[in-house]
Length: 151
Image (tube, rainbow, N blue to C red; front, side):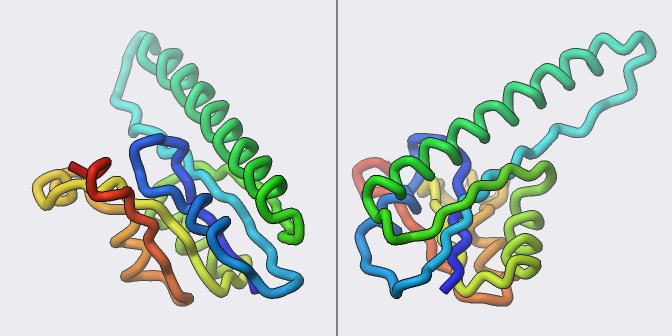
């Protein structure tokens, strides 16, 4: 079985890592931990001040994402050493990149967290978990935060 574990590194979402560790998986199960860095579109900047800031911000996000996938890999290796774990950081739209990587890699399951946002926030920000569930060609499981954390 191939599981694509999509994380964003934020602490307030449902934890797909903890959800993965709660279960027993068949021998030979592979887990790919994925984080997607979403660059903010750069506006026209005639003197390139914003461009330098944009590049620096992107580097910081890539570093944060790398730390998040490495931390998750360490947690999984300790909690479920029988799983084969790999990590990946991509750049782009998380909604699109998660679905495309799952299809490219041949994932059987995508495990993604949810932040438990209300309807207004989901409308304004969009829900990565919801978009993945709607567009993925494989099964999708959404790990939600405990009710007290979502409020």
